[in-house]
Amino acid sequence: MVYPLIRESEKLDLKDLQDGYESIVREFPPPDYSVSIVHGKMKPVDKDYEMQRFVNGQTHIMVATTVIEVGIDVPNASVMVIESAERFGLSQLHQLRGRVGRGADQSYCILMSKDELSADARKRLGVMVETNDGFRIAETDLQLRGPGDLQGTQQSGILDLKIADLTKDEKVLKYARRQAMDLLKKDPELGFPEHRMVRRQLEQLFPRQLFWSRIS
Image 1 (spheres, rainbow, N blue to C red):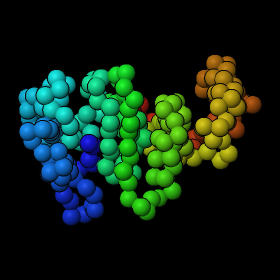
Image 2: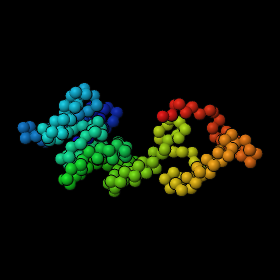
Image 3: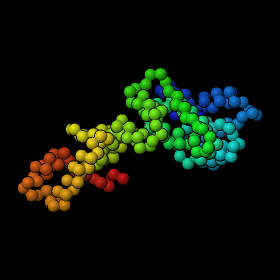
Image 4: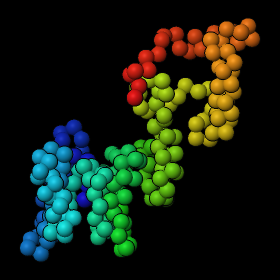
């Protein structure tokens, strides 16, 4: 069971891990069942202990936040429920879903969401239901979030392209890139008379010097 929050928030109307843990323990009481709880505010030694109990089969259910997104390999884990799935990004959902289905058993990932969803949230959940293809999921993520600033530190947002679409115009964009690279090989400073318009346009687009050291 995966939750977006550890504790209840006054600002966000979301089911939280603490409340979820109490609900799970009521529905699956000891001694018949044992439940692990894992979240990012736990001490590493406590988190590792709970993780290992689940891996070893000493607990039957794990209640967690996205700390289980990577690095957990439990072949007999066959069902995942993600609460408030609309709050997660596509890459997170894809990584989380990858924690189940690692063994031979038929596995399921159940995405729980509220009734009213934004168009983007509906599309995110829709593509998760339709496919397990990581490339298609990444393409949809690119469409929804945008690639960000390719020459800056912004990690999402739509590029200021007049016509081109990164997800649809790959061939023509690669061709344009090759042409630009050939031009710069011939004239790195764009000083030739026939390239002055290109230089002027670049100076208008990038009036300030780029600081590449900030980008990594």
